[in-house]
Image (cartoon, rainbow, N blue to C red; front, side, top):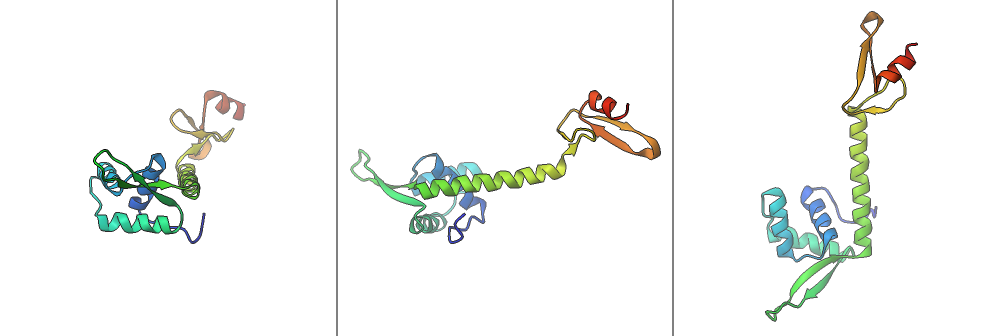
Length: 143
């Protein structure tokens, strides 16, 4: 990730980047979609400074949308650098999720597979309980 890139230190900023990854959007479109997601409409004083920060860092470009009314509206579109930022962001978020799940999931005592729902436990001597992914692993370990 670009060390000098935008700070992605809030859900507002992360959601804005992810919404722009879907398709070009105007500031109004972003505000509306962010309100649908979070239940709170972000102010233009929050949206536009972040969009300008992204533009100044070459993560987005402004494009004009020529509407039938004669008045175009400014749309914001990710650049290739912006798409790289999203890819890096999604990868980092995935790694954080994987690390957290790794801490929460039990592993089969025999083969090491991570256990989600189905598991077999057996108590052995001195109250020691071992957990396995299946009867086969439990049988293979204790035969």
